[in-house]
Image (cartoon, rainbow, N blue to C red):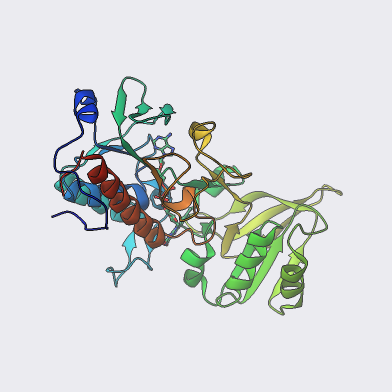
Length: 332
Ligand SMILES: Cc1cc2nc3c(=O)[nH]c(=O)nc-3n(C[C@H](O)[C@H](O)[C@H](O)COP(=O)(O)OP(=O)(O)OC[C@H]3O[C@@H](n4cnc5c(N)ncnc54)[C@H](O)[C@@H]3O)c2cc1C
C-alpha cells in the first residue's frame, strides 16, 4: 500500500518514463549510506521502489568513526556506531535495496531522468535522494585518528556524557567551539578552550557566556601538536604559535570543533548550495531540482544527529515515492 499524500495518482505509468527504463534505469537512486541514506533506502525498498544506494567508498557515514552510541532510540544498552550502521544496511537489503560501496563521481540533474555516474556505470532515475552528509574537520594528527572514539570526538552532544567529572579540552574559536564548551560544562570538571589566535571568532554573546562560566578557561595562541595517550586520551601537547614554547596539558577528552564541510562538491552547478556548500532547501526535503530530494547533515547545519538524519531520510523517501506516484512510475 502506498502513502496517500494527497496527489492525483495516475493508474498507468507515463509512457515517456517507461520508454526510458533500461538495465541501468532505476526508479530512485540514493547517494550516501549514513543514517539518512540507509533510512531512505529502507522506506523506498519497503515501498517496492528497489532503490539503488550509491553508498560511497566510505560506506556507513560518520557513525563508522565512533564507538558507543547511547542516544539512538531502541538500544537501551547503547550500540557501537559501525554495528548500528550494519543493522541499517541489513534492514535496507532485506527489503531489496541494492547497496553498492562506490562513489558517485558525476551527476546530471537537468532531468527529467536524472543521471548519476560511478567509475564504471551510469544510472538514470526520475528521483534521486542526496544524503552525502558532512565531514567534521579534524586537525589531521595521527594520534587524533588513533584515539577517535577513545577520548577524541567532534560531537559534544553525542559524546559529552562519557566524560562526567573529567578534564576536557575543546579545540576551536568559533560559535560551535563555544557552544560545545558550554554544553560540556554539564559533565566535565573543567573545560579548556584551546585557540590558535588570541581572540575568538565567536559571536559576542557566546564569548560573554563562555568567558563568564567558572568551569571554562582559555589557552590562547596555541595549536595542538599531538594528542597524548595509549588506548585513551591522557593529554595534549601544545605549541605556542608566537613563542614556539611546547607544553603538555593533561586531559581526558579532546573535542575538535573547527567546523564541518558538507560533501557537496559533486553537486556544484547542479543544485543550489549556500555559501558554505550546504544544499539549499526550504523544507529540508525538496531541492532546487524537481525529483531531487535531500536528507541529513548535507542540509542540516543545526542538529547533526543520527536520529534526525534518519528522520529526514524517511521524509525524503516518502516524498520521492509521492513524486513517482504522481509521474505514474510507482504504484498507488
Ligand atoms: C565522532 C562522531 C560521533 C558521533 N556520535 C553520534 C552519536 O553518538 N549519536 C548521534 O546521533 N550522532 C552522532 N554523530 C553524528 C552523526 O554521525 C551524524 O549526524 C549522522 O551520521 C549524519 O548522517 P547522514 O546520513 O546525513 O550523513 P553521514 O553519516 O555523513 O553519511 C554520508 C554518507 O555519504 C557518503 N558520500 C559522500 N559523498 C559521496 C559520494 N560522492 N558518493 C557516494 N557516497 C557519498 C559518505 O561516504 C557517507 O557514507 C557523531 C558524529 C561523529 C563525527
